Image (cartoon, rainbow, N blue to C red; front, side, top):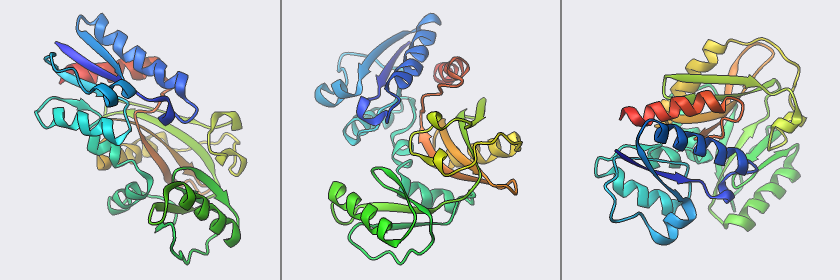
Length: 270
């Protein structure tokens, strides 16, 4: 058996370059320790050189996110070769499209609106978050306009942007592998985050239903088509769980060893 592993380009790691590399390396090592061959290719090399033509590949696992890489990987998945995660699932994690999928599936989320740069939104719920190429916290109309203009300068007119109301509560990060592994942790330190959410949310430890969160997270992942996933949720003071983000193959940095084992087992079972 020969597996192809494709690591993530640093530009998509959003401050988690070392952690992303660590989980990828751990999965590769476990598959090799089980007696299988693994060919490792960086996402950048895949894009420039393509997939090796002289290999008989039994499965692909990857952390790629560029459209060029996903298109190349998709060609193999269409031949019946197992791919983790499926390229379509990775594309489903784009924020604006993800909101539509999760809303349709009944996943609890904050009040949101998908809009486009260069248009008048009519949004008047503040404070809120502007999620496009970046994530920004805004407190009023002028700040919203400024943030959308920044998105427009980066992506041009017509780029989709997700507006999402700010919900007070604790932040919980969750991680999963299909229905075989789940881990979650409450954020208790602002240094644990990337987008400044911790500056605007309660970091005081509190109790919440782990089973309820697991059920919601798994349903969201299945809706997007993900088997290796992670995300963020807000737990309100009333105990309501709201999903605010879902990602393909996160770093699993708080549970790397257990997650790597679950991921490698998932890949080798196919």
